[in-house]
Image (cartoon, rainbow, N blue to C red; front, side, top):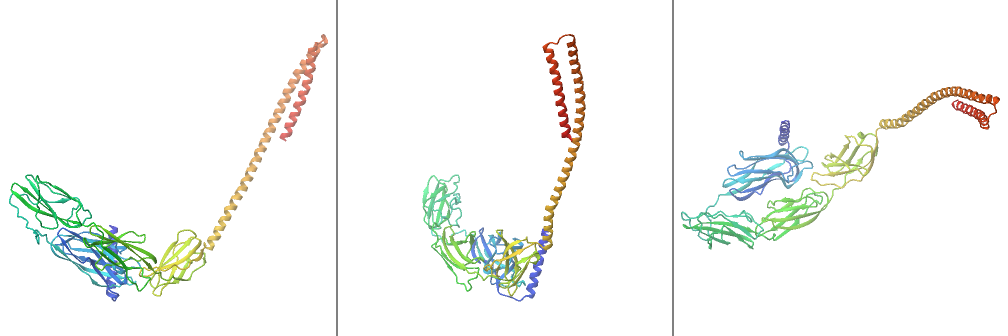
Length: 580
């Protein structure tokens, strides 16, 4: 709902602007709206497409609106297409009303606008309902110039008129008599074809398949293929057949005739047209039209093609590497390219007849560039992106493109408009990252012609001074603070380790002293026990003579006791020394 309301508001604003401009602005160069094709003859139940075009070859247009009217008793709109339109922004989507008999459109062509005589706006497909004359005219319309003031430059409308023929139930000029159907005889059969279904279309297939139904009671069928539209079939088949395949028909228009016979006699005759065209158009010539201005981005060509049998239906055009586009000749045989960049181009076109046969041709052409813009003022080095101001001169009322590219990165583009004297000023509004850039300028004039690029200039953008100082301080602190923290951490770890060692040494010293006391006491007890044993043995020697073994044990015990005491004293002394 919000979107619809917003759209209506925008439309009202545009209409107000259009009305104001129309009232106060004087007429400028002539422009017109027209339809193409503007005439044609169609039968009831047929469909045909009409293109809506703008002609503004003397001045670029910026906006178009209009209402197309048609008789509701003879035509109805089945679809509206924007394909191939010069409009790049639609204020309101194209719409139609079969009850009111109108087609409405309103859109904008972005800068530099459109300049040319065949600017397609949209395509309208009609379906015929009733016979007679069916005029297709413009009820309203405006064309605003791309002059910055919205001047209405519309000076006239083209109109269209189409003839809708009533169904002809009797042959206009019979080439042979068709017998009247007798009561009770079979009715004229309805013929269908899988290879040539529509009698009004042309086909490239020379083998034809036709079929019709055989009602109950039909005894025979009579067939004929020839050039006469109202011939009486004379080749009889009994029993009746309902299918026929004809091979290798020559190019041209043929008529297939069928009638059926029952016991009551022969019935009515059906005449079915076959149109075959297997050959490409006879010739197709492309001639570039001379230009007074070699920098005109729109090239003009004269297309001359002929197909004697089915006729030229349309052209398929491809320019350089762009996609193929279909182009319908409006009767002038003049094709105008869209606005192209300067340089060499190749146009490849195919003339397509109504059967779909093609004949291709090509043309090479060149569009000269406009002179490069001149940069008169720019900063070589700035420390604030807000100070990026570029001044220069180029063609008046042109779109200026400022390019900035950092090393191998993608170039950034910015757009400004030159004034009536061709002067332009670009001031950066958004942040541009610091770095070294290449700066150059191009311009596009009101026709869409593009200039050569200016020389590439070097420019360096630095961060502001306070930003650089702050960044430097942050960088220094980011190094010093971790170092200080690391020193404090090492000191803390050293003190912690020393405290741990000191506590450990006290504990070991205490444990060593305790072990020394225990060892002394234990060794004293052991010594006392051994001395008592040795004394007992020695006392026994006073009463009797000790054996050699007993004497050896006494000597060995004394020796071992002295040695052990000496070793234990040394080890205890070493432990105390290490602990201290």
